Image (cartoon, rainbow, N blue to C red; front, side, top):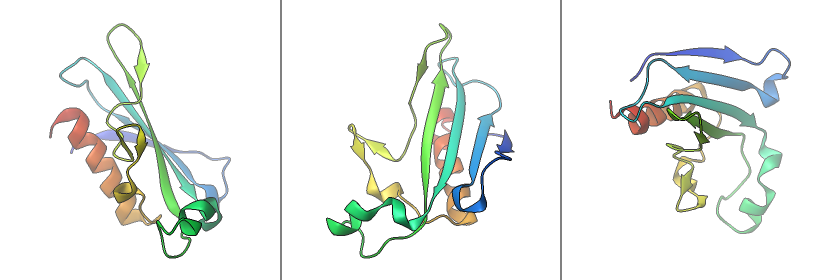
Length: 114
């Protein structure tokens, strides 16, 4: 996995923890990659439970990716929670430290092919 620096937002309560991950170096396409991981409490998914995507609500990690290319354009690439313009529910993971690390590793793998 690519090395990175991490900053936890100091103004968020634990239930809504937010981490900004900045990966070191650039991708093959000369891009910089930033990942923001927010902890969403169980109450954030009522429609997913109602529509039987999940059996019961749980706290989960919501992620956003910010990839800036050599022309200074920013894109939302390498986000495993998105697939074909829709939510990839395989990557809606419970808000544990293990799953947070899994998400960081997956974004690194997709962006840096490491």
